[in-house]
Length: 170
Image (cartoon, rainbow, N blue to C red):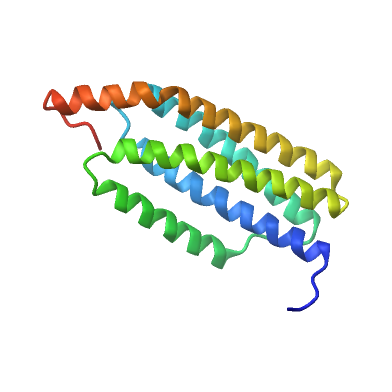
């Protein structure tokens, strides 16, 4: 393996995290169209869509600061992966519940990515950016906690709708 320097590692981590955020944004936006029966869940996703857009903006600024830009290929691949995941869930009877579980887990994946990115930024001498990434990690924890608080309520609504003969998913 070729020698890597911290700048190369940092730029790659920025691109990877940005691709992860773009994938998450696409999945949340797709889910929103089918959550009219789950207004609390939709409200959480709408708030997090806006938070995610701000996080992507932070990542874009950090990339620009190191003379880099997002990887179009990587974003295309992760976007396709996100679309496939959403399509698989859409074929399931309990699409809403599966998306809820995946969203909850995904938040913690992003927490880990931002915590790691903050360490890499520190090592790269980008302390100002590291603090922004720690803030992003906290935003992801908050989103995960909001989703966690909805699991029982969304499940109950799903059961009420399904057992009552109504359509529970989009």
